[in-house]
Image (cartoon, rainbow, N blue to C red):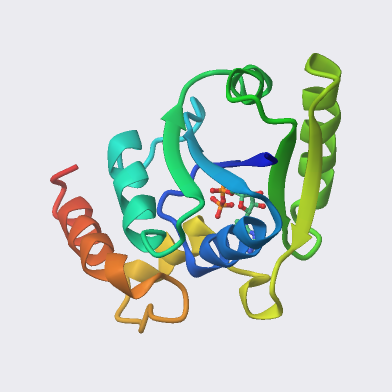
Length: 165
Ligand code: ADP
């Protein structure tokens, strides 16, 4: 059974992420979407909240499991018995960083390879940070975020703008 790991910050999960999740779940027997702790970023949603939001939008995909971890990705993959990391590649911006990460992960764990899925053209310029920026204005978010999480997102934006979090 081939298990792949799709790691990221997912703060919050976007339609671009969900597109990669669906396509990777179609390729592998099992896909573990893992919310990773990024010490350099102050997230909008806690790790547990991000896991819950991804669970909600992937509940119709039976071979997807959602998890959260503060472990080193190469170690996490080994513990889960996976030898493949899946990454989404957007126009230009992701290449250098992802190439470097793939080499480092392979170096730490030589059994581990990274496979890239190219972003769907309508999501090529979509990132969680762009959505957070747009969220501050009165913009229709339905092409950027899965419908089921838009109310949670808008509520959190409101709370933040009121200085509540
Ligand atoms: P973001 O840059 O949106 O904060 P993450 O750190 O959560 O994203 O990224 C997790 C993974 O998802 C990375 O491999 C990233 O390249 C990929 N990804 C992010 N947005 C998209 C998108 N719109 N289309 C395809 N892949 C994406």
